[in-house]
Image 1: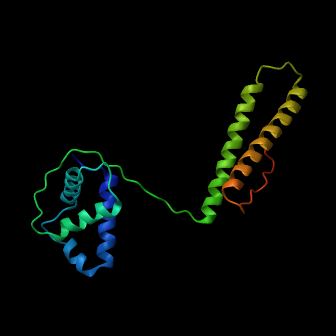
Image 2: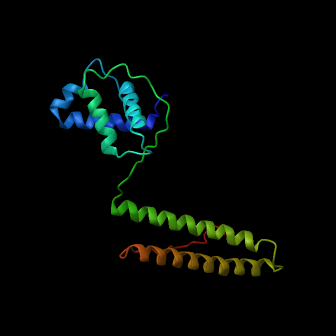
Image 3: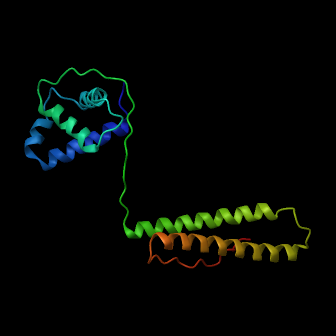
Length: 172
């Protein structure tokens, strides 16, 4: 089985970082008789023979280091299996606030579109009355949606300030 690009990259990134921090491992990592593909095959073989459904990063990376450390580990054939690579991303407070703001804007836009669909063709009004009704409905939907999002976010984390939206209805 050919390993996934993400799996291979995760292993390679770890090994390169380890080699940059550990001079002894850097020498081991440069062995000509070793390859990243065979290392990934070795990891898959270890996982398969271990009989568990999942392994920690430390276990998997430990197998990778062991592969490079041991000269007698060679000619590892690929094995069939499925690999799931988990990634975690650390965001700064600024990035988190920006993501929340973008989410709120997206939710407000979706609510506006839903309100438009709900109002379309159901009420017989003059054009002026339609504009006024739409304006009132949009303001209500935006206000309600914003209140829900702010309340939900405040429950999870205090101290986040939501910027007031201005001119939400331009272009109507």
